[in-house]
Image (cartoon, rainbow over all chains, first blue to last red; front, side, top):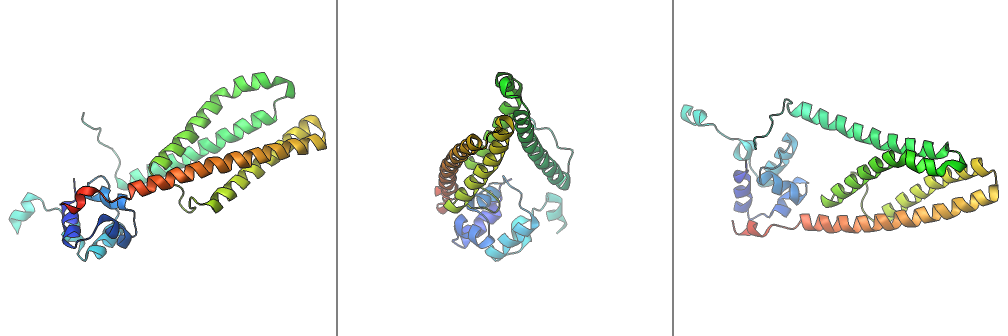
Length: 72
Length: 161
């Protein structure tokens, strides 16, 4: 599944994939594949991406199920 | 077509990859040792038989190395620690030349028992190996770098979204 939250946050910050990759210490391909949902990053990489984007793991990587939304 | 569901969790998947990785390198070095041992222990008059005996191992070994080479180059991957530069190419070509020279010297000397011709043959083969490996690495490094640059290019639609 595509990670649109990560993509939108990056675009919101006017950051290119290359710049985010540089800040997270990975290649641009890796960022592209995470956004496209073709690669599942490790927690360590998720944290590095969140730090680079100035947000938390919840903001970018958490996906709520329908029943969780109802409970809140 | 529906994909077969994996029976493994993430940790087991990583373990399996590690096992397959080790298996691949055991096959690589095992085949190389088998080929070299068969060449070393074949009597000088039976080279025609040797080619027939080694054909299977040789085809599998070449297929394995070519697959690994092309897959790595296609994905812009060179090595975990080494960089595709002149220093690396020179060092790797030199190591290959030394390894081949050692094998060739012992092979020719133990089969023909003549030091002069053995050294001459070793020198020529070492030089050829060095030149061949250096040229191959040079081309592979250049293509890998080009591929890395291509893969690192920013997609055009990113700025429009």
